[in-house]
Image 1 (tube, rainbow, N blue to C red):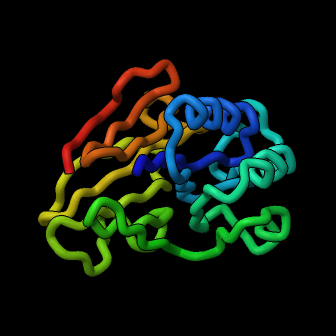
Image 2: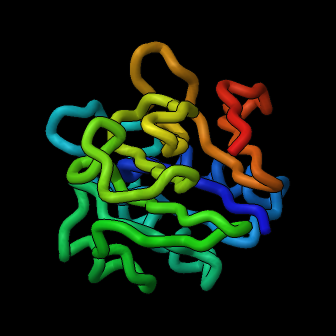
Image 3: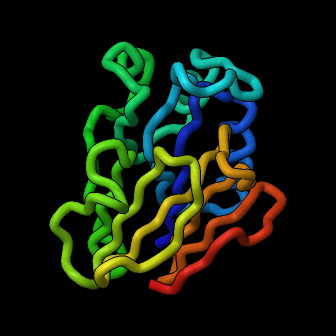
Length: 180
């Protein structure tokens, strides 16, 4: 089962469309969205193609293969526009015999892990920085941001399949990779 992870859309219909084109190519079983859907946030510039209502409409049309968590820029009013649940702080995914704790990263984070056991996976967004590492026996991941990457990183997304987590840019280049 292939999973695709995106984070930090921040209302960019342009970058969401790019991510959904990659989803068509990658053919994941599930698209996991790690928060910050519609609002760009007071510290961020407006991303390319800023259109929160368009983002909501596009995600609603994408359908039932979404799993989503709330980001620090998401509010109850955002949920009113979205037809899938996204207000949970985290979701647990059982994937190929592993427990994946997926969250936005503004509560529990790579620097403040929840109680997990060696071999588990923790994935977050929030920092807009790609990460593929191991910390205290826990694989820690961040696909980066599709719309507002930081520290000169490219716009990116993550793929988890057959025990490999690969962060890719939209040109198809591998940004980071780790074997789980």
